[in-house]
Length: 140
Image 1 (cartoon, rainbow, N blue to C red):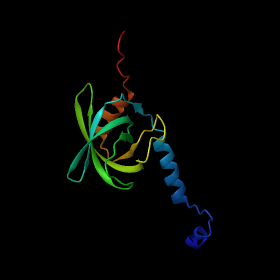
Image 2 (tube, rainbow, N blue to C red; image 1 turned 120 degrees about the vertical axis):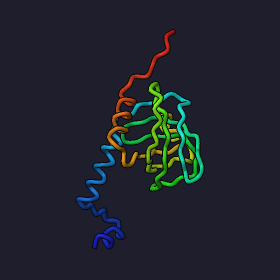
Image 3 (cartoon, rainbow, N blue to C red; image 1 turned 90 degrees about the vertical axis):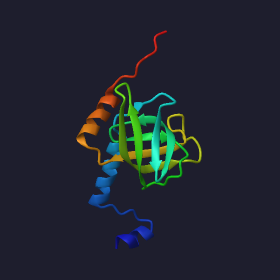
Image 4 (cartoon, helix red, strand yellow; image 1 turned 45 degrees about the vertical axis):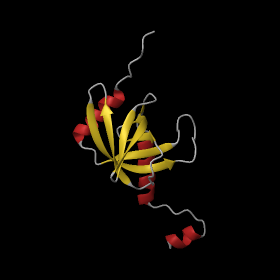
């Protein structure tokens, strides 16, 4: 029945789809720490390692600048070095959005949004501390 209604352009929502939409909205609202241009990370796609720019990061995910050949729904690994503690994290990262055509805006350059999957408690605490830390300011 739902498929029949959707084929006629009627939007059908269920408790499950409403819960998924709410989860997506909450994930996008997670506090993100913007990072300076040039902060690098490594995206492991199969046997290849792609050096990527880490535009911002939160406890739940990140936005990376890259032209790596990835598709939404794939899961890869993202290696991030947290400074100044010099802690390297390897995070399972599900690709949730790919913007390869052109820059959407200054806040969203060409790149990929990822959601971290299966983050253990220790890694979560390290991410929380990193995201909450104020970036060092250069004195003039």
